[in-house]
Structure formats: C-alpha cells, structure tokens
Image 1 (cartoon, rainbow, N blue to C red):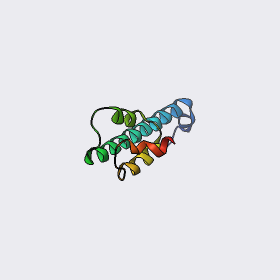
Image 2 (image 1 turned 45 degrees about the vertical axis):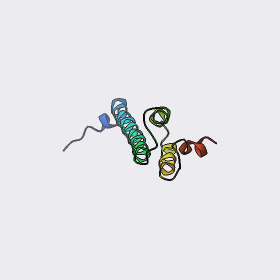
Image 3 (image 1 turned 90 degrees about the vertical axis):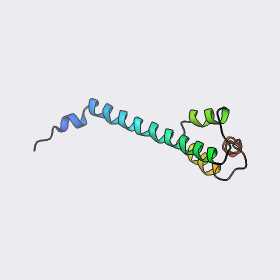
Image 4 (image 1 turned 120 degrees about the vertical axis):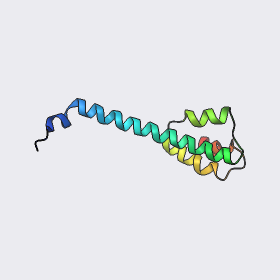
Length: 86
C-alpha cells in the first residue's frame, strides 16, 4: 500500500491536526468546568451567577484542576478561588 507522505507533511495536514488538537483542548476545559460545577452543585454551593460564570470562562487547565481539588474541600464556593488568585 502506497501512502501519500507529502500530504501528511503538508501545511493542510498540519492545519487539520492543529484544529483537532484545539478541539480536544476545548473539550477538556469544558469537561473540567462541568466537573467543578458538579462538585459545587452536589455540595449545595452554586446556582446561577458569578461563580458559575467564572468557572465556565476559565481557559487554564492547570487552574481548573486546582479549582476542582479545592471544590471538594472548601466551606463555600468563593473559597475555591482564594488561593489561586493570591
């Protein structure tokens, strides 16, 4: 079977890969936001408003991981942000 290697090295192929990588990254960030909100909702901490908007607006995966870990232990929803912003 002959494979058209020039295509796989072409700029079009790179654009396709970059687009898929970007889509995957966005999906991971969206999932992280959903996970944080699920934990906060389960703990009775979040409804519509500023906390939900702040979580869904974030695009930093490391920060989201930090918030998710904190969401499990804080005594109020606002506390998930306190150490991250200090």
